[in-house]
Image (cartoon, rainbow, N blue to C red; front, top):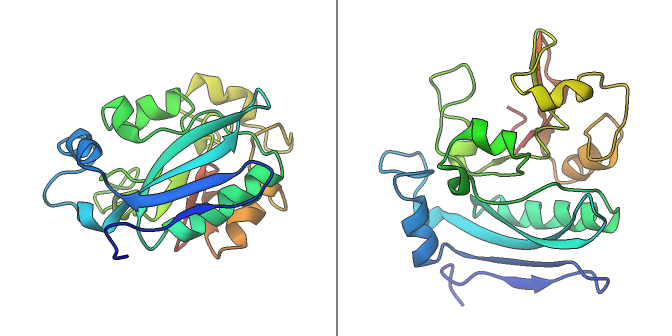
Amino acid sequence: MGLAVLLAVAVLSSGYHARVQAIPPAVRAQMTGVSWHPGCPVGLSDLRLITLTYRGFDGRDHTGRLIANRDAAPALVTVFRRLYAARFPIRRMEPVDRYGGDDYRSIEADNTSAFNCRAATGSTRWSNHAHGRAIDVNPIENPYVSGGRSSHRASTPYLDRSRHQPGTAFEGGTLVEAFRSVGWGWGGSWSGSVRDYQHFSVNGR
């Protein structure tokens, strides 16, 4: 079995399943010109489609899909296995192409997503998302905060990070510790006036 057909793994007899595979032709077609285009820092052949089980805010099992770098896929499978076991709720999980590759629209839908070939917020350099080595989890509950404010009105109740509400990221909490267990860094621990509570990445940036 080569890289083109990667692992299909079922973990946790209690119901968690995860499958990692090369990007299928239909998904490639959906991504091209939307979340991926020629000139991106990673090729489609280096990306993987991850299909996995997550707990919703309704307490039920749902099937989500992520696009990530092939070298980040095993860590993400491990993290979401841990989150599932802890019954940590996820609102929605769809590739950003569902929102036309628009990060703002994806956040407004409270969508957890990983790969998107775009620049880092407020910068001209590539984001870790453009390499498929970052993910934003429950972005409404875990907003990008600059100067104490969020660009998303629905995130206002979550600006007070001392309130550990369902689905939120906080130091010592389930979400942060799950990513820490695989060596990923958290945008909520950045110094300065910016905190990106939704953001987790391989290198912490």
